[in-house]
Image (tube, rainbow, N blue to C red; front, top):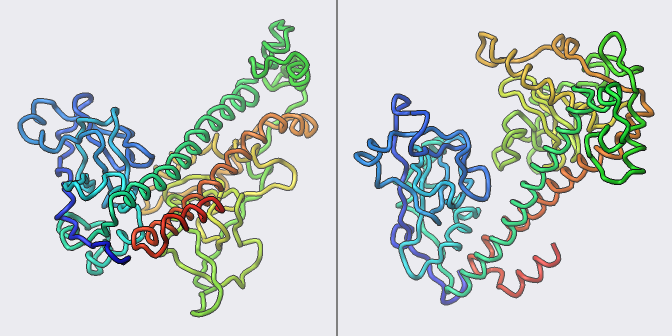
Amino acid sequence: MAEGWSQAPLPSVVWFQEGPGILAVDFHEQGVPLIRLAGLGGHEVSLNKCNYLDPAKVERRWKHFRVDRGDILVSTSASFGRPAVVGSVAEGAIPYTGIIRFRSASPDLDQGYLKAFLRSAGFMQQAEAAASGSVISHFGPSHLKRMEIPLPPLAVQRWIAGFHQTIDDKIELNRRMNETLEAMAQAIFRDWFVDFGPARRKTEGATDPVAIIGGLTPDPARAAELAGLFPATLGENGLPEGWREQPLDQIADFLNGLALQKYPSVVGEPSLPVIKIAELRNGLTDKSNRASPQLPPKYIVRDGDYLFSWSGSLMAKVWTEGDGALNQHLFKVTSNDYPQWFYAAWVERHLPEFQRIAASKATTMGHIQRGHLSGAMTVCPPMTTIEAMSSVLAPLWERRIHNDLESRTLAETRDYLLPRLMSGAVRVGEAQAQDAAA
């Protein structure tokens, strides 16, 4: 700790409160929102997947749990951490049990600095130590009472808060941008490959290229080029003339991961994090298993690889967390013929059905089989058409990957500097230089 800085018991400067335990019988279709873990995934608290409570019952039993704007909520259950700030959307809602709200209770503690502290490795390390080896999902206010928070001078706190907020704002901007890019790409894909909109509009007599392609671009020359990709007739099979159906496993290869216990890491030697379903969903952590890098190269995952978990909680995404080892129950999806945006869009098109199949299995871990990939059909234009379509859809896909990689770099910079700033090991001037370099 830098000279003149202090370390304070957390309860002496912070007010905190865990949300109440509320039974499902109290859930309603409308009323006061009950914030769930899903609402803490972004920069600001949302009402994603929330339940609702009877306002009269809230007034009688839980009104002192209503959150105020500016409160910081942190999950202490399945996914520990993830601080999010209460804004206008969630103001007055009730946080569910397993979510703790924090508020500065001292003029010596800046609220923005408190949020940065709750994001820092220092907080996480204390939380794990306070839990005394118990499962972190049981962490609660009793553990917080045994923790401390470093207190630099207020001016330094505010600079650290601003540094943290700037990075968080950029990460949040990237997340929102990716939501927009994904929605655009899905809309185009659905129109072109599911509804066959341009071909149908041609068969109905449309001649304006902009109208044919659904107003994708106002540039007449570009619109005419894109409109020319689509045939003016539909075949007897209902597909645009010259297009054909293919099973999903014929347009891409689905490489299943390994049982990586056979490739154990060796202490003191290089190793790779093991990418399991949990890592695919939540990213790498210090608790991720490790494996020897001496495994067949095709089982090493790189940034930009497309992964698909076929058991448990089925999901698919582009990996952007650095090199790792592909564990069983995950597919690495590749193709020698088709671009990634194309086969990934078809995987995601069939994903809801795959999830239903897995959920219907009377086992502890639902899954799909390779036969389900063979039964999932795709629609494939000629390769020359696919290549031309890539000029529209590939940039949207690649920009999303770029944004995710940029956000990872920003988060690594934030997480590296925060504990050093809070301890005084790195001074504000040095941090500005390092931040600029990053």
